[in-house]
Image 1 (tube, rainbow, N blue to C red):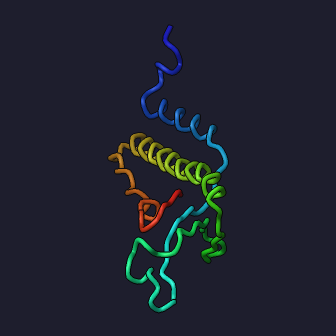
Image 2: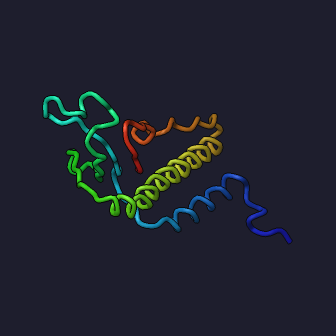
Image 3: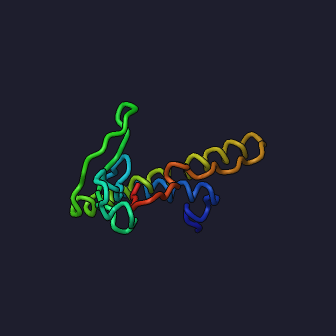
Length: 135
């Protein structure tokens, strides 16, 4: 006798897999963990002439609160400790987007519509500017 999993179609099976993975995600951290360097305001400082000699790196957790950017300076140890949390948030968003696409495809199929293409990646999360980022 075939198993229930074998009887499910691909999208139904994938939806169950996504939901199972969502249930295993650990703590999540909103915003981003960032590392950046800076030049100072001291005339003649070496940081103005050599980009590799800038001050830093400065580590921070940055997020939006009430429409305003809020940052908290982190130690190396804190940055390392919370990186996994930021990675969990990124994976959470990827899984939710996949679940939404599976729902849109199922609706389109049920209504006889063409399956909509998946949305482009979130531009905010795709940016990889001048520093380390996690989230």
